[in-house]
Length: 411
Image (cartoon, rainbow, N blue to C red):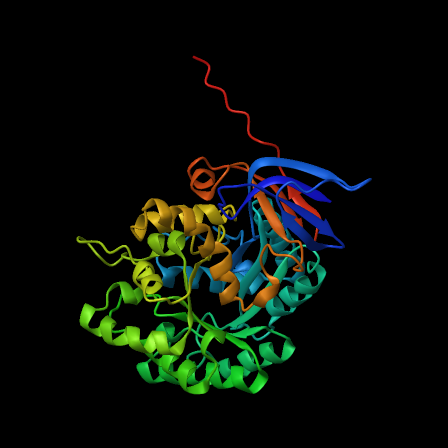
């Protein structure tokens, strides 16, 4: 197959892409078609590595209002709502919702997903369902599964054993939620346990860290120290870290040294945390997003996630990662031209580092031919014009496509 005339990752000039046996064979300008070769004319369109959802909860997706709505819009009421819905989970229910959500994501160019799965459930039915789906969907969507203790590790009955059981079942990463634990001591112990478990079973780490407006919530320093001391480093991710928005600058200056040394990744979730945070404020009202711009300036890896799709924590969501980028650029005040042009990396190359995908990700000869084509010549225009994902190719095979939108003004 020969893809003609694409701008690869915002390149000014166009190139052609030849795909053979599911891999990128050649990438160069003006490649001549071979006899019988399928040619896809994408002249002037944008080709990017596939989008990556680096933080979502597929087990809770599409459950908003079941059995009750989150009226306060807070994280904590969301957890209460989910604890009620969790009682009615079946494997069929979970699989049906995840299949629908994954199709939504695929339509928008997503090919890799890291999902956090609640393991504060003695049945571990959601973990079982997602591990089965990881295998069933592997030819279309790569799914990483995090054993996530939604209601705490040391604050939930038998919490430690449930997390370890989920890891033994085959989870790819170990999670924690220190800001939700009963005490500061529990919070620290839960992070220590999480990191030790990852070392024991050779797993990644992804912690829901300081998702609260309390500037005294300091789980991040503990996680970064453990990542550094254990040597896990970039195998560790701190998700949310919204308390960092409220930390005083003197403390952040000190913290940045540790964060840089630790080499950990960050995931920010602009849609959901703009919705959830600042709920206890009158005015001034905090935005509640971590210090994305400052972290990037310090050379620290940051990616963006959707977090929730129509569930107790977020009553909207289509799985479109560009919605996440659009909101993130606004609330993080990253609206310079080059910042917008480069923002696709927050849901592609940066996210690939978060998921630890290695060198096999990206548009280069020899790699698996996984990429997307958007109806624009660069990402600035694709984001601004909400351009369609015309093609999504996974290992050289199309898994989603769309026609260019027809827009007419009738006056």
